Image 1 (spheres, one colour):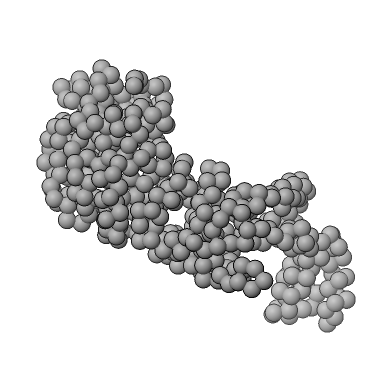
Image 2 (cartoon, rainbow, N blue to C red):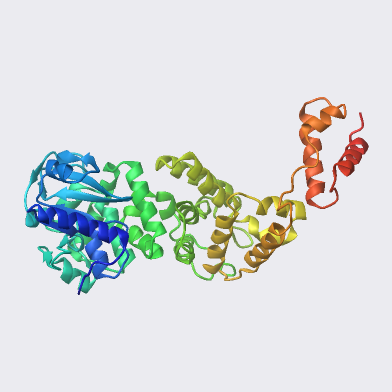
Amino acid sequence: MKITVSNSPHEQAAFAIVRKLKKEGHKAYWVGGCIRNKLLNFPSEDIDIATDAPPEKVLSLFPKTISVGAKFGVVIVVQGNIRCEVATFRRDGSYLDHRHPSKVHFSDPQKDASRRDFTINALFWDPATGKLLDYTGGEKDIKKGIIRCIGKPEDRFQEDALRLLRAVRFSARFGFRIETKTWNAIKNLCDLIHSISPDRIREELIKIFTGPGRGVALDILEQSGLLESILPEVQNLKGVAQPEAFHPEGDCFEHTKLAMEWLDNPTPTLAMGCLFHDIGKPPTFEISDRIRFNGHTKVGELLADKICKRLKFSNAYRKAITDLVKRHMHFLSVRDMKISTLKKFLSHTNIEEDLELHRADCMASHGDISNYVFCKEKLKELKSHSNGIIPPPVVSGRDLIEMGYAPGPLFKKILDQVQELQLEGRIQTKKQAVSFIKKEFPL
């Protein structure tokens, strides 16, 4: 496996930092995920640098720096508009909160590698010489496609329980197998995830479910016990049967897993909306003439809202996610909607994510996306109109006051009816609206 420095601005900036550190007589390497990704021909979002230079020396060498964790030996070096994390080689003391070491001791590359989570993330590379330093067998594990903890897995997960989820993410993203000792430790320690703050869990879940292999990741989470620990509402989908005529793919869990895979480059809200879209089915399962889930969208909306609050999603994200759950069954009736109702439905601020969830939902079950195609064509047609999908109102509350109507509940009723007729094309001008109002709501 050969690694080279590309011409990307980020890699050139990171290379320049290494050159400067080496010029000052220090060891300096690219380290961690960026090396793993380069060996796998995956893009890297950032490049971390490890060095024997103490943080105060790093701060003095570069004109623009941010001291984000100097006591842990971490400094952000800013090159133009690019930021690179530069950390001093270290070994960690004991972990008291399953996240931070109680103290650190600056050390050397080998000891620094031994404190990291997985072998594939503990590689050092010198971009100036092309030398690869591998103290834990990471290159071999990358070639074999294995996720393996460094040292004793139980110790690594006790140090930072978020590594339980990181193992799942790397396994799903790269298609790697989690080796036996690491896998057994994950299953035995899955409840340790509760020692991690909800916001850190949320961010790791977002990385998992917006990345590649998200359906596989859902399977791994379920098999490891982590899903039951973090999202019991999603775990409850397992084994819940569905009517074969509409869902030949299997139970609710299998459907959700397939729907997640069908999503095209999902945002965090779309990914979580898809994950939660059927969580109202287990509580509403009943068998009458066939298997039914009456009211599952309302129940699902409430459950999704509860989960979002538990994971500390922002109000805006929570609203977008619960709206996706609430609206995902509306597509069944789009062809029967009045044009005014259809226009209102298609004018929703998050309609593109509604549509993508519907497409994935269909492809993960019966495969009929005709309503999706209908909505896409109707959207294109409506957006081509000069006034857009929802035209500006032809009358306002001020107009009603000038006509002699007193402000109150009647205002809304009048304006809603006028808008309805406007959306249906039966009212197009202010004059027509005034005539309608005088006739239907005489003073």
